[in-house]
Length: 155
Ligand SMILES: [Cu+2]
Figure 1 (tube, rainbow, N blue to C red):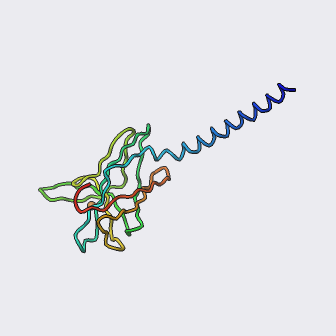
Figure 2: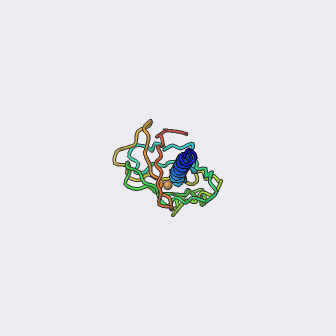
Figure 3: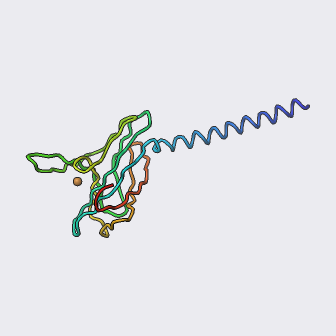
């Protein structure tokens, strides 16, 4: 009788463990994006009247699989684009970039003069000191919200 009770308790205990394990697994699947760490993010305050602001940040993918950002959006602005600045005869040319791949355990830096995010047609002029909310849209279908401060000069 005692053994039977113990067994029963034991079974319940283990089924609870399974249940917890299930929750941890569920959590893990949503942590996939937390594999991407963001640092040194900032939005450069454009001169008054400018229709676009550039944003810079650093991605580090600590996961074992490459991560692809397909698009970026922000409530502040009609459209966000990924750009790469390239120099031709001392002239800076901005090219549209379709998607951004962050290799497994790799870094991608968006910096002045290189890759950057372009925030087009802000509904209100951006103000130094405010934080701009952006959504990163990954090829996995997941999203990550980030906040980047607006600054007049550097990060
Ligand atoms: Cu640009």
